[in-house]
Image 1 (cartoon, rainbow, N blue to C red):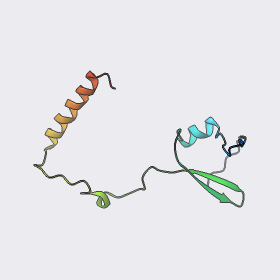
Image 2 (image 1 turned 90 degrees about the horizontal axis):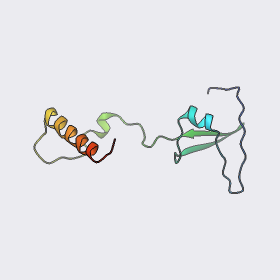
Image 3 (image 1 turned 120 degrees about the horizontal axis):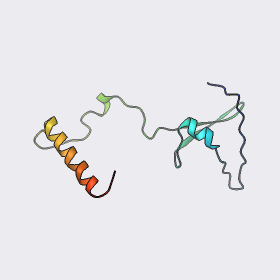
Image 4 (image 1 turned 180 degrees about the vertical axis):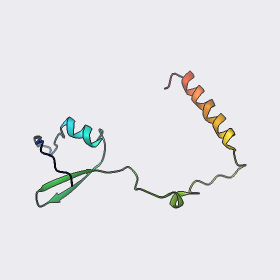
Length: 94
């Protein structure tokens, strides 16, 4: 566990909410709506950011999406990708 010497404080609201200081959120890469795990320790509480999906290996997910059709070449996939990007640019996205 990394120990920091910077002490930051916050206040618990009447609804049980607290604000994590901006510098801490930025250093941890925490965004609004992110899920956090709360672990009670002897020294207090520990907040940990949760990943949206558990870590997996390619062999655990390979073939999870079944496709029934003619296989596409890399060139065909690249053309389709470029076509979609052009379409989205034309609609003002990106």
